[in-house]
Picture (cartoon, rainbow, N blue to C red):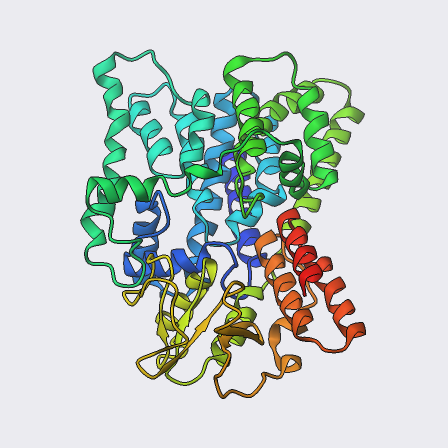
Length: 494
């Protein structure tokens, strides 16, 4: 018993250190900047809001600081908890301690999972809550913990509900599942006081419905290409090991294996800018099945047992290498270059994730306090005049992060669109940090930012030979089919 406790502690401590050391040197390109601002300031994040996660970030910002690097330690602690709780949860699924220990290592060191724990994302909390719900499935607190898994983390956790929901209790007792749903009262109660990230201050039934359904249009007919793109982020070595061990897992079991089918359909049907982020919803039930395969192989001869450990170790090493973010300062490079390009006292109107970066850069890092930030969607910043925004407001020059359809008023200058008649020197693109990036990131959105930068440089280059080389650079860094097709389309038109 003591040796098992020491092993669990060692795995938990090891994963904490692993998540800490493989993280990015600055904020990530996905939602980390948004969560850092929204959590430390108790603002409103994108739907469905993730109130529990924001409250946890708020506590960490008070104990440490609102800096991304300090807040990221929260997910490192969640990783340590996932290692311990996950081992117990896999054992609860009916497997031996040795098989469960190896199975949880396989899961946590897979590239899509580790790359969430070493950044500031909601998915680590969602994973821990699901694992805890599996472990406490038959306990007296099961309904409440199951409710936390469904409402305290990420809505995609619903796909794994058959792993932890138990209907052996009486119905009044099961109503405790709904208690954690009251966390979402945070949205209408807090939205009126938010001034940085507010998403339109949703507090009425109509505005709340609009807020919670903002991503409803992303469901599509299942596509093999969409699924293959997502699975590609697992990596061929790890995917081969998962497939081999899952095949050794024995016959189909509905409660354990239906979440695998549900996750595959979801990944094939849902359009995601970050297809790697939600792969955990497939890898978790798949890892439980793989744990059954590990246990089966452990019962065979010693060479087979050693071989099983070796292939899992190989998959783990492959996952750690693929999830390494130590070179990923892409979002910071892009943001620094953009903010330094803005004219003094100007208005900057970022679009989409650029709004997250600008909010973090100005409100947390103190970049460019002279610049007025404005969001075209009315989700961020109180100053949000309706589109089309003019080239000048109150004597202030307006810069936009995207203005492809405003050629008469705005032209691309460096990484941003500036008024056509603005008296501004052309930026020296050679001095921009984003063009000196030569590393890699497991985050497809980060790599697409580099691709976007090279594409914008290609458009402004007068030398055809250099423009062609920039086009190839853009394609080289692009990580998703959508970005590649966009680069090709813009290259044809320009």
